[in-house]
Length: 447
Ligand code: MV4
Image 1 (cartoon, rainbow, N blue to C red):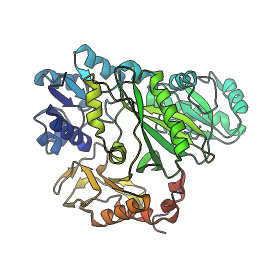
Image 2 (cartoon, rainbow, N blue to C red):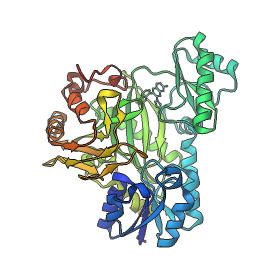
Image 3 (cartoon, rainbow, N blue to C red):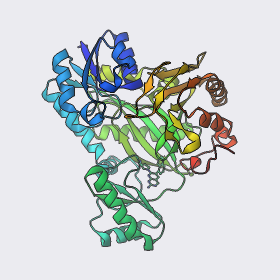
Image 4 (tube, protein in one colour):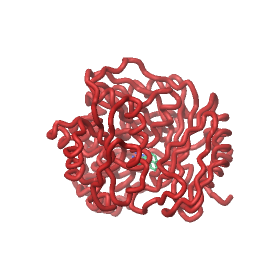
């Protein structure tokens, strides 16, 4: 059964990315948009478009009733949520089911199991996937927390069970600082997620963030599509992703790939997803969290395995079986996130009108973007302007190509992260593949 019409519950480059694949598959598309996005390309390129509200996300892209109204008007038979917004909202997946609409992604139950970090961790322990040593479940009170931290051994990290992506986290180096950090972590969790449940883990110093792309179908087959190294990030915002990881070995990929498959099988995962691992300097790896959505950096994997991941998502949602084989990189790829931010002033957002725009081109260069000359980046959503993805036969060639592509990218009217990437590509340690998640803490753009 092929879908007749897919509604894309998203905006920006990912909405365009999904429309492209739908067109290639002969599936009709519906765009939804807020009044701030009237002039967006996703509105133009979709077969139909429905305005769902004012600029604020809460009243547009995050509003389940408004999106379901657009589904009813247009008779779409499936929804692609993209990333962000409602992509990992279990209630939304459930409502789609009640309307008889296929949510292109995992089930509400699968989203919930991975959304609660303690439940996710317990599931991984049962499945035999390595996790970071820590408290058994929720910390009940201060006394229990102090006891757990002592058993685990300082430094420890306190994490929110409802969290992910860094919110509500506190590192504690010594026992005397525990009480204060514990109350801060709980308050922040309560304020951010309406849930003050926290747990404790051994703090892994200067780890790499290496994630495995997986795919599972409705028949229980789960495979991996190799890794992406996402260690180059600032305040939990990824800036560069690449595959294969310069830290990877064939043996480690086998081990981590198998662990990622186990993780997916443990919840009978349906769809494409990502298993995030922390990897220490000895190449010990630990499950960190699972993302139950397509991710911003998916093109890196698409380039190294030469496969369309959005097409894979749609086929899985249509009930097609996937082949049982894993995918291994045959090339090297890297993605630089070009954001409307000023890297010389703490990466502060720089929304506004793009007066001139010339995207890099040429062999091995891919640019995923929704912007054009004259387009105005609204201040209401994320600041992503474009994803610049390069691929080549070696990592060194990728970096040289990226330098060339960054040099020819013209974006005027707003500040961008291009100068940051240009500096990064010249850094000897980066070029050597010698970096971890702390790399940008002491990276000086002006040096
Ligand atoms: C950690 C850690 C060190 N030890 N857990 C950051 C976001 C959230 N997903 C988990 N994170 C971390 N968890 C233990 N036990 C270090 C981080 C971390 C990090 C992880 C991945 C990528 C970038 C990071 C930046 C700072 C801290």
